[in-house]
Length: 105
Image 1 (tube, rainbow, N blue to C red):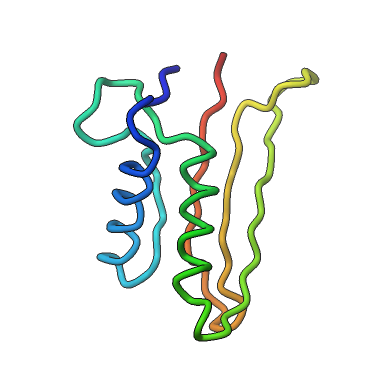
Image 2: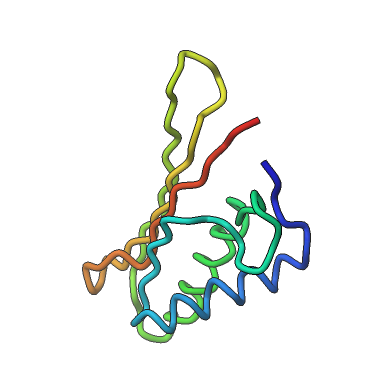
């Protein structure tokens, strides 16, 4: 599993642009970074920074958010097979974004 090591800010900008262009919602079924080699995925840090950017952009509107990350285990091991990340806009009762990231080693 490869994670793109370009500027993190560039990936966050790309995700934020997708979020804005999709009526302020982002549901990714494919975490492949567009234009990069197959197997290059967005990282958990990318989505943590995206959540921060969304929250700060709505600060003046006094919008409340809930950020959650859930680990999914297919085995009894200590390492999750995937991680689902959600950002909820509690004020408007909508899901701002959701993504499930593979965590293969």
